[in-house]
Image (tube, rainbow, N blue to C red; front, side, top):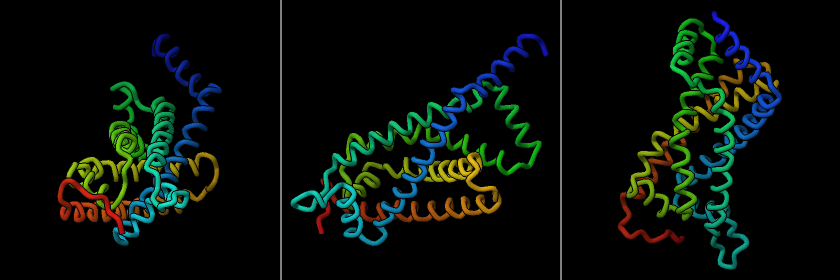
Length: 240
């Protein structure tokens, strides 16, 4: 190894051990937990469509502050503002996470050799989080930006977006990527900061959550597709 390579490696490890790196790790963990918890809540709220149009309608009105309206209807601006907040958290999370991405072809090759050379479950989990993070870098902003520009939510309006606007093409890719990324991320945060030492047990919980969230997410998406098939354009918002 020549002097230039030694200096490069020294600078790399020095940057990882710098105070900024420690702060970035904390920011990445905090924003990751925020987004992971949001995903858990979001998929369950969305899955209320499985209980029928009226159930989903009332969930939306509640989340949009319908209790503060004289008519009982929520305020779509709440969805817009919250989507802007989530977009900001995503940007911060991505910005601090990008420093961990292999930036050169040689680093990717070294990673592949490492993956084939050892059978370490946490290394494999990190690899899949890396891959899904790369996918989300392109897909997540599209979904969030749509909610910012068109925050109207409801059984018919959401079904129109999924079926008639072909948003299902985005969601069918986004769902597995975001679920796998989030659940592995929550697992790694719990291990990294010492919340648990039972890695095997926590990995099983993460796997169960991945399967469970994928199932309710796909069932919800299918429900929107069926509702969308029955709608005629222009769509009339659902009212119980």
